[in-house]
Image (cartoon, rainbow, N blue to C red):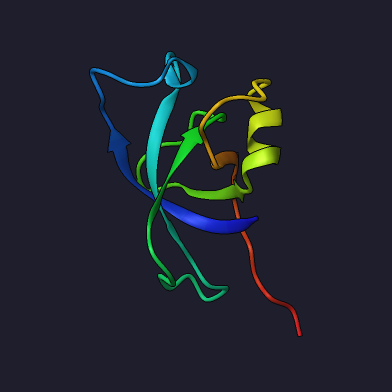
Length: 90
């Protein structure tokens, strides 16, 4: 899992049936200081996140398929929560 910022929404007129009725979002991983790190990726939104939200992303195909209850779905990443606050205490 990692923390990310939602950058935008993907609109697709044709998509795999596993994506029907689901929002696909573009997310950008963040480091603990809130800076972008790594490449952006697509994730299914399971929590009604919006553009600009900080979210918790599960990025593991088998677990993601369990979340959507479809063992054959071709997906890897799922937005699992909207983050209100995070930080590193030393």
